[in-house]
Length: 135
Image (cartoon, rainbow, N blue to C red):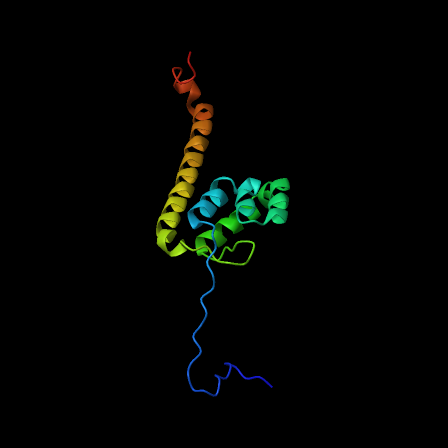
């Protein structure tokens, strides 16, 4: 019967933890692929996951849901390559990736809101502003 945590060998010396080998793939490249081309599965192809890359391509990023999940996994630092290895430069570039992604989403929300306002404005104020419609 095993116990948790595992019992150390009888020599009394602690067993050093073996560091997991790092991937040869880049966090920055994976993050940019996931963010900008994730709808086409480019991030999955880059990580060597061809099967799920094809599925992601055919479903356009799982109708957006798979794209968002992969982006979050990459930003959280838990995205792995085909061999199950973590991306090596995550700690170096984590903060800048989060800032740029948040700024991108913020700009997307702002431009969406502004475009909605300008779609609504001519309908309501068009007769009051003939110059708006080019008359």
